[in-house]
Length: 129
Image (cartoon, rainbow, N blue to C red):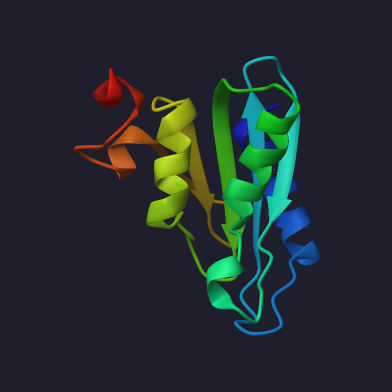
C-alpha cells in the first residue's frame, strides 16, 4: 500500500469517528511490517479523559492482534495536516520510533516525519533497562 492509499484509508475511517463534543473527526491507518493495515478513529467520552485518539485506536487494535512492528501511520483530520497529540506520539515510539508518520491536507498533499522526530528527546523502553 502506498502513502496516498494509506492516507485515503485514514480519510475514509475518520467518518466513523464518535465526536459529539468536539465535532473534530480524525482517522488513522496503520501499516504493519507484515503488510496488514489497521484503522482507527477518535472516540470521545463525556468524561474527556476517557477519550481515545484515532492513532491509539489503530495501534491498540494491531497490538491486540499480535502486531508490534509498524512501517507507517497516516492521519487525516478536519484541519489541514492534523498531527498526533503527545500521548499518541509516545505510544508510537514505544513500538516503532522510526515509523513514518504521514499527515495530509484536503488537496491530496502530505508531509511525512518519523515518529521519533515528532517526539525529540523521547523516553522509551531502552531507558528502563
